[in-house]
Amino acid sequence: MANVKNAAIREIVIDRCLRHPGGRTVQQIMKECNDALDLHGFRLVTSPNTIRQDFVDIANRWHQPIDCRRSGRYLYYSYRNPDFSIFNNPLSEEEIMKVYGAIEVMERFKGQAGFSWIEEVSAHLRVTLNMGKSPQTFISYDDNAQLRGMHHFAQLHEYIRSHQPIAVEYQPYKSTERLNEVIHPYFLKQYNSRWFVLGYNAKYEALTTFALDRIITIEKAAVKFIPNEKYNFEEYFRHVIGVTVYPQDPEEVLIEVKKTLYPYISSKPLHPSQHLVRLTDDGDAVISINVIPNYELKQLVLSHGDRMTVLSPQHLRDEICEELQRIINNYQLTHFE
Image (tube, rainbow, N blue to C red):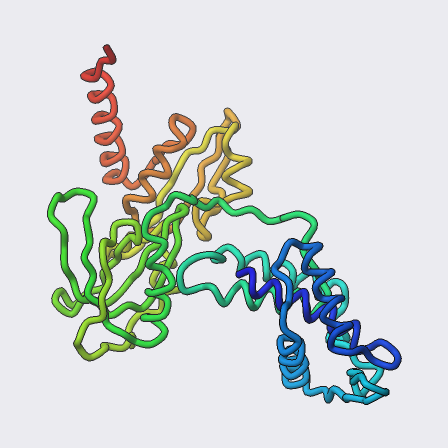
């Protein structure tokens, strides 16, 4: 990564030198580069050939000739077009700030295996747009830095892109035995700060979902890839909260929300289908969502305690009541010594 930042700093300095009236010698440019590199704590340039290669890279990347003029014993380098700069870009300040935001998003994956190119791209954008280094980070994400399995992300991303079937060794939560399955990976999805890969399992003729933090190993599978001709994942997840999709139709779920919680639920809906049905005399709200009830929905309701109560359907009320009873039994039977 340091080499990328080193090169970015050199390009800034070299661009300035090549715009200097009369140009600069390689030795002068190398000295100015080293002054800047030393200021930022990077390794210094020890060979003039490094600077000469930078000339070639700049000329090729921006299609701008760099002239060499002899004066006495020295060669002076400058842009043929004296008005050119790698920082001459047509973006407005507002557009540059939008690019800055995109860089912040990209850099979420910085440092992960397979994503080293992000450092290079972001450094190049900062140089090209004369953005320098952000004085402070102004975007934060609810990521779990200790989450296991993220080292699989780049590999899975590439396998999906290249249509490569994979053999997955997987450790389920509710079993001590590991599974070995061959899937045709189609999609990566994040929910609740965890990542999941979805792929077609020919053995079961169905879509399979694996949490990345439960994957032990991934290897290429020597079978022909089965392309995705069935699943539109925007539609596939339209009627669920989370990643668990049961083969059933969505249904209306009515939920009573206490007035102390409703402003939060109103501004951050449980699901895009959420709408207000009515307000009670006590100021509580009854909301409706059109979803397929699943594990994630039940956990979401339970996470709000007595401030959220499912009114219907009855089978979902019963399932939540059973879970609450198990919680009560657990507390009654557990004693701390």
